[in-house]
Picture 1 (tube, rainbow over the protein chains, first blue to last red):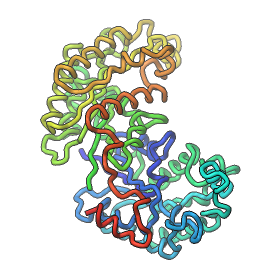
Picture 2 (picture 1 turned 45 degrees about the vertical axis):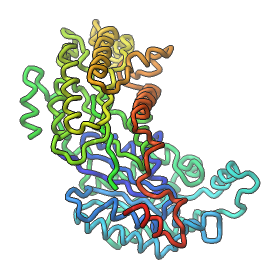
Picture 3 (picture 1 turned 90 degrees about the horizontal axis):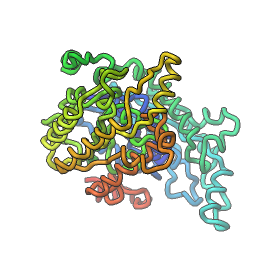
Picture 4 (picture 1 turned 60 degrees about the vertical axis):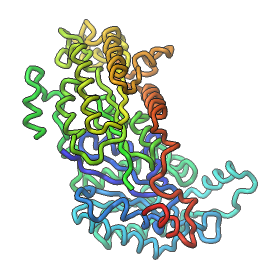
Length: 243
Length: 243
């Protein structure tokens, strides 16, 4: 029996999602014996660059397209022009159009694919500055390369695209800011996630999956639970369940 | 470009390897953008029952067999006959023969597949008893259902089979006992692994993979690093690297 696949497509926050307490690892654990989690995270990528990978990661001629995919991009698109991370900057309207292209491509791969767009997390500008100072000392940028306000416009754009195209979304930017002290609780360097921050992504993604039809508790296990095996006659349950 | 796959085949210690600090999650992180880690862990299974899954998980007619596989079984085979976990017991000679069948099958799937046999971890009999008492109170078993000594004979059997068939092995049973206080440091209930115990498995498996040819640092990334992308001409590097 082939398990359904769930592909996590995104930037560094997806690439790092199997570190200690990571949201990708937690999803893998939750969907254990139900679905395979496939990580396709590319640190530093914006939507413009990620488009070049789309056909490679989601080939149109696949006979076994994923059952679900998360698209988690925008943190790099929202880098400010004229500042130190300018090379990653993508204008808001192009960001939205790139997300539309991705969703349309995934729907072309499989009309039933469950798609969840995840907005970038909020930015802790103080935390970004501390991080830059720890790396570059006095030479650290005087002006922020990302602001929470601008990243918020990308988060809104992401949610708008999801509504427009009828796919699911997680507004991580809003959700995280509901918690007092989100700056240090959820973000390790003002942008990337702490284990607690990973926990928020995990919970929100699972909630969307459940809200669709992809609930781990309701999916069949790939093979019999060990308690179903009769030690005197083990072949019986395997003959029933594995043909 | 299709990434090579590394399949983790085993019992609960493999199934739980994506929990907090789990060795499967750490492997996924290490082989990020290099190889896909596929978890095939079946809690409670012994080698006799796992044999029924072998052809399903490693079909002989696959055109894309895994590059590597870990086989991590024996903790359940080593349950003692006549005690509370008796249904899982498999005699030592049958355990060894079952491992041989698995290795031969994997080699038939792909003669170049890197195979690593992992022995069961040591047993902390005191920890098992505390765990049973926490679950069942006074009714908990008076006599241990597993002993460290008997599990050690299975660990030796596993290493012998690996040597006999010329595949790699990790003697987890020995390795863990080299550390003072291994009973609580590495085992959460006298059998399953703490995050530190997961760390030992992770390090030992990576060492074997490196000793073969499967070193993450020497494997190519699936797509260009973001620093290689020219923002004025992003298509260039993708045309060079993604065809």
